[in-house]
Image (cartoon, rainbow, N blue to C red; front, side):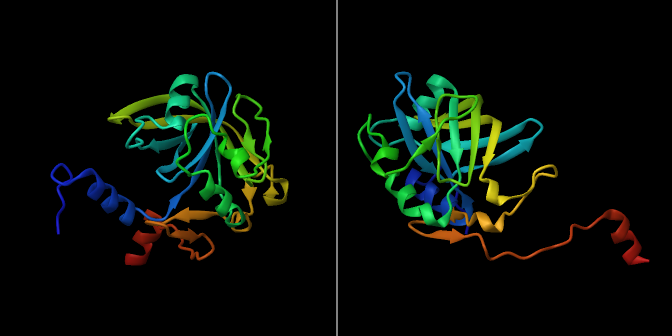
Length: 210
């Protein structure tokens, strides 16, 4: 069946995209507003987009009543944000920070989360998160009514020492991070179920046909 997305409602388009693009990593985003007030919220329209320079993309959908969400507004105003990754032990706290709280509520305090200062930017990082990216906005595109895509440059990556296998070689104990990803609706996915494939080379493919 074909769905022409300019002919279906916004809610249907969201369901079709979110139900098929899985799993999606979760960006637990911490920002500060221009008055220095902290905000935290999780987003699953997120991924790495390049390494030279280190680049991420973050999709921020609109709040149906308030327009730009606090995260989007803070990034647009200040250009700074921290993306924290979510291990399974923190999913309840992450879910609590997704609450539709009124503006000005500190979701980190609500969830009982401690923070650590960032090195290069004002927003703090979540202390218990095993990985945090300090980011500045390279550009942003308003893709719809109060819907924004932010392209960010990663200035620093904080990784808990116990998950660093070989710092000089950039090797991380990925499975030990115990990260979760988003599925659809209220479902989440554990990242332990993996398998390996060797990447083919043209030379080997040619050799195998001889």
